[in-house]
Amino acid sequence: MSERRDPPPWRQRISTTLALIRANPTGRVALKIMIGVLGALVVTIGVALIPLPGPGWLLVIAGLGIWAVEFHWAKRLLAFTRRHVYGWTDWVKKQTLAVRLVIGSVGLLFVGTVALLSIKYSLGIDVIAQVLHYLATN
Image (cartoon, rainbow, N blue to C red):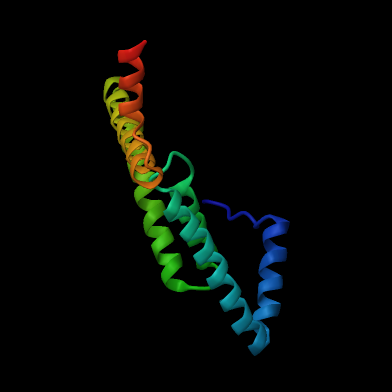
């Protein structure tokens, strides 16, 4: 028989606060607007950071988590994302070290390529050409 744990006190306080805000019609609309804008801001920043090395996808998922506070579609999408990320993680953990190294190498190659192309086309700096020029002249 499995026991259900009570949520931590900070989570209970947040739930109570949100329930009080939702009890007022004006508060409900204001909360939806605030959650919508904050989630959109975090998702937008995350999407902008996806091609760069960094926490792009993490911010997109965090934005979904913010939206999930108020929007059922975001809660379902977040659950779908979690299921697939956990499934992928479990699958990778079951692979041999060689397969994990190949997956990691392909991931690093992809991120490096995206970063180099982002720098080239957004900043106009061709890093590869500059490195090759440096190696040829020195």
